[in-house]
Image 1 (tube, helix red, strand yellow):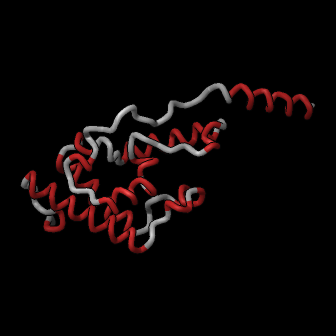
Image 2 (image 1 turned 135 degrees about the horizontal axis):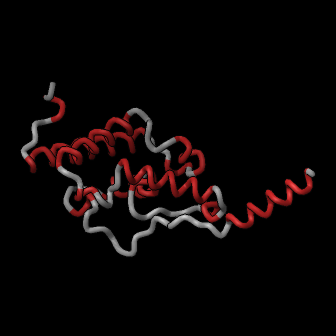
Image 3 (image 1 turned 60 degrees about the vertical axis):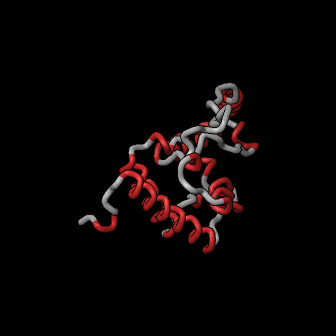
Length: 161
């Protein structure tokens, strides 16, 4: 009986290898990328590429194990969820208040160490943010928030009650 269960399990594992999720890779750079409109210094771009863009852009660099199911499905769902929260390649499609709020969240989550996720940095050790990285990203997020407020004549977030 156990032998039949093991054989069935192996057969199922083999079959699911052919059911692959769609990859998160864009054919061309996005015209709606945050960097097309708001200042994104090179040091910020490097941090975003190293620590954020796999889940928060239209281009994920997949590790070898993303081709093994069900791990690939889990990663695809993780990327989909990350992009639904914030997609730097779709940033310019956001309404001004949403864009400002997203930058406020970047500032808070980076400062509080909530991003990048520990489950991500466990495997991608180079994605861990140093204190300097956190300060650079937080300062950039605040500057971008202020630029959004100025451009769209929004009341500054911290002055709201």
